[in-house]
View 1 (cartoon, helix red, strand yellow):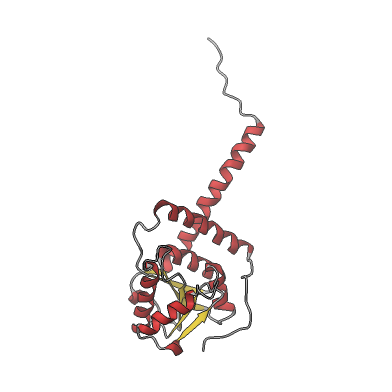
View 2: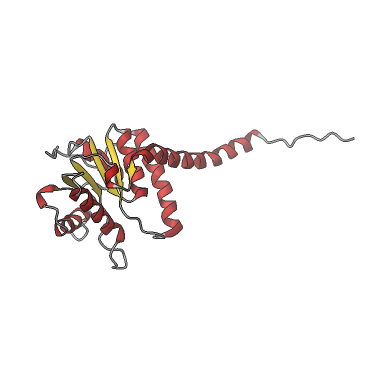
Length: 218
């Protein structure tokens, strides 16, 4: 009877397999961490949220690239108005990108909030919220908020609340209406890597692109 020996895997191949598996593990672990550490604080019912001073609405464009209205934009507006009218928040901090004179997320959102009945005096704009990480850190360090409700879609709130709580901020997420099948698989893949970015930024503790002077919301 012939002896059967187990196939031998060289050390070089083991290293290659390990290097191939490592990015996959990091992708899965970072996404799980973001999901697990934020899930307790994300709500779809305003009655499940505490009363706080500020609702932090994350910016997005009013229109899509094809010129159609952006449902993400209007769903976030509706969520902010609902929070304000319910008395859960007294101010809205709009944090977004102001890359060019023609593209101004905070101003567009402010205009719509005022049209929906929120007083201009209760709206504060953050023009340097270039990404989710910057918006969270600036809300604390620039606008002096250590407790707030993040207003965006569920997938976005996961990352935002994860980042905020990692920096000692008592953050909650109010999930605005989602947009089913928007972007499809490509959007999901982008979100997977956005979670990797959030995980990395939290671990490294990078500084926002811009801080500037403190402007506390009283």
